[in-house]
Image 1 (cartoon, rainbow, N blue to C red):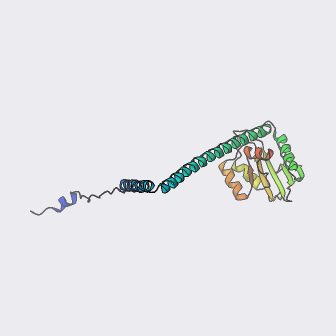
Image 2 (image 1 turned 90 degrees about the horizontal axis):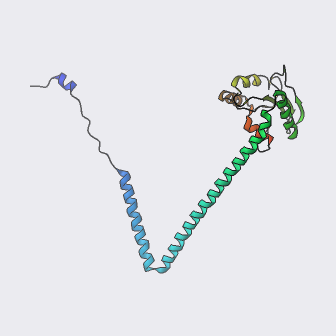
Length: 222
């Protein structure tokens, strides 16, 4: 009797099993075998030719000494770098603390003093009602017109995208900035960072402000 088409349709079809190859274990064994053979040959040469044995011993000893010395130097370099970073973080933390204790007007005056200290001229504090986003205007040491907006915020209040958009709408067109920067005692949101990058506005958060104040970081016009 011929099989029914229905039965053929329902019968599961088995796929041919794939053979699995194990190449990793074979490679390790082959490498180990080659290494043993090489060591055996070197050992025989060392016994047959003493001079070769001495040279081999000197070469191996020198290599080990260099490796140990390199690792020791690397450890010292890493430890020194970590200590330097801790010292820098402490210095910046101490430097930014007074700015958190200021009110908005004092913060603007403090930024103006930083500008004067680092060589700016024609420094003016223009913040207040109707300032249209500009708090400090100055001429940078390289001659460009600098416009700074000051945001004296607490550590939990971030400078947002809308804050940057309001400043971006006036810093160039109204105030004629050639260098525009927003300086805060806090941090910026991702939206603010994205907008600032698009508008070429420098962002100085609390850590960057501490770097500027302690001369361990750049000023806004850099």
